[in-house]
Image (cartoon, rainbow, N blue to C red; front, side, top):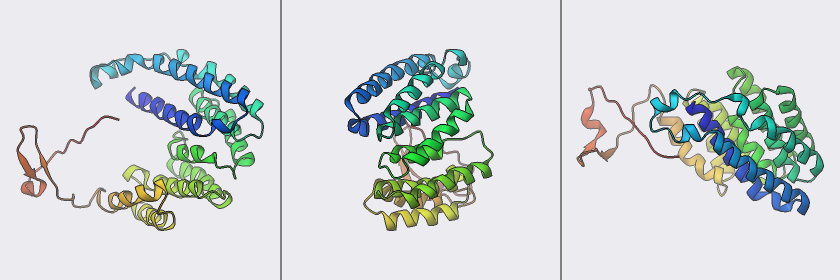
Length: 259
């Protein structure tokens, strides 16, 4: 259930980015429709996940069973598709098609999700609005086998990087490939680190280029089998400790935070 909540949160973030940055270029009527629909969807998805958000612990959240039939995805999907069709070749259509793809995947309509991707890749591959699409690609298609997912999404990112003239999109596409290859520490971290270095060198002033610097360290050091980097911190009692003080002992590190 917590994974469901994370997926919903990610979808909201992507939607917020898309509608906050690119819809302003749309015709006024389309812009108004998109903004109104997004506001309505955000309220609906927050209400749907409210029981999980109000859970006081992971144990409590694990016992909560949400009814998939009540998910807003099914009712909002045709409405986003209608707006995407109305927007035609305008860049704002990318944002609507992104939502169509996400909601179609959630409802199990793989054909519509694939059609949305095909439309985006065919009609808008050179658009600066592709930035949002590129950003969400590494977090999609989890139903595929790892090698199939790497081939499909990696191929799209490479194609976008080659065809799109905007540096921000190119940087995001290359960075997305590095994320995909690294697989949250479970993939080819050597190849991921190499690609992160390329991003940092080729697009040093981009958001991705700056983030890649930290990702290089993570890819080369914070992986299974590597010696944990030494650090000094303060425990819950206010006592300062250094990790190396516990060398030779079994150590459990619990990192937590709020996102």
